[in-house]
Each structure stands twice: as structure tokens, then as C-alpha cells.
Image: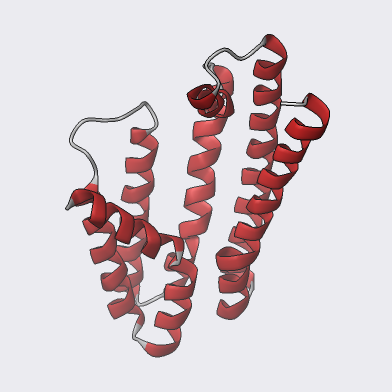
Length: 186
């Protein structure tokens, strides 16, 4: 049951920008905020009892900040608070990826070692470099997410944070994959 709940709430959070756009155009902000708050609380219930890794505290901090934003949106009846979720997520990922550079192994190296346990030193360096690239991406993406939240209309915010940002992530994944295949020959 927890797995199903985790998958469903994860999918809903993936679609968060579109849910916010729909909610802002069809519901009162307070009702939307409380609905999103309910979703986040379900997400908390879906978490395993024991932490799976050191990144759990960032995940919980992200949830806590987002819950706070939902409460502020409901209390103030202001959708702006709901638009900050992508900023919070990007900054959380920046913390996780950035701290993995300070306290190795890097996030990308950890992911790579799942499939390839014996990574040569050049591969470790590549993983570290690519982790830096992701950190830069998260800084830029958080900045654009913040800008669209504060200065753009809701449709533009939803388009960027619900589609364009994911497309940019896909391009970054594809570029890294091509680099590994064509340059590193891995």
C-alpha cells in the first residue's frame, strides 16, 4: 500500500505545476492549497520508517518547506506561495548534489556504481564533473523558477516548470549519455 501511495503522490507532485495552474483558474486559492497540503501529507505517510540514505533529511526538509508554503497560501489566499515549490525542489537537489561534492562519492558516482561497481578513476572524475554540471543546472533552474513565480503569469510559470524544465533535464541526461558513449566509450 505504501508503494502505491508513494507512486501516486510522486506522479501528482510531478504534475504539480499543471495542478496549480488548473487550481488557480478553477478553485479558490485556499481550497487548492489545502488539497495540495493533503497530497503532501499523504506523501509523508508513504515514506519508509527508516531512512534509506543520508538524503532523506533534504527530502523531509523539502516536504516541510512545501507544507509551510501550502499553509501560507491557504492562510493568505495567495497563489504565489504555491509557485515556489519548483524553487524549493531545485535548491534541495542543489544541496544534495553540492554536498556530495564536498563529501564524496558524488551523487552521479553513487548512481553509476549501482550498475558499474568498479569505476576507474577517470569515470569517478567524469561523475564528479557531471555532478558539478547538475549543480549549475539546479542554480539556473531555481533562478528561472523563481523569476516565473514572481514575474510571469501563471500559464508561463506552469509551462516552464511543468514542461520546459523537464525537457531541459532530459536534454542534460541525453547529453551526458552521448558523452559517455561517444567520448568515454562506456
